[in-house]
Length: 69
Image (cartoon, rainbow, N blue to C red; front, side, top):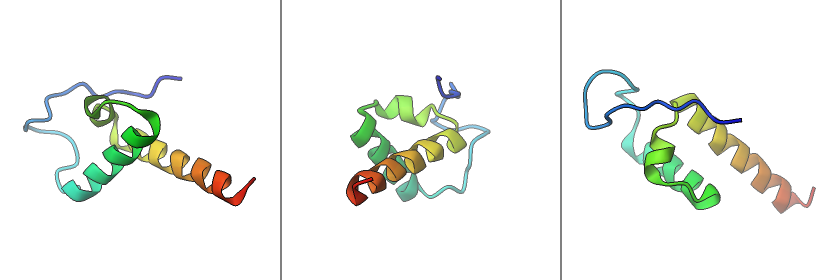
């Protein structure tokens, strides 16, 4: 299943979560990029809830692997 993608100009303008901390955004992008080897643009094009879902799922998989399930 392909995630929903928001194709927009991230250089400014209306839309998006304007108060979302830049450090947190970079953390999410780095985490997903490291595990899924996606480009920064591909990850930033994801809708925020979809990106967070990938972060949560990757963390869940990592926990299962670490715990030996």
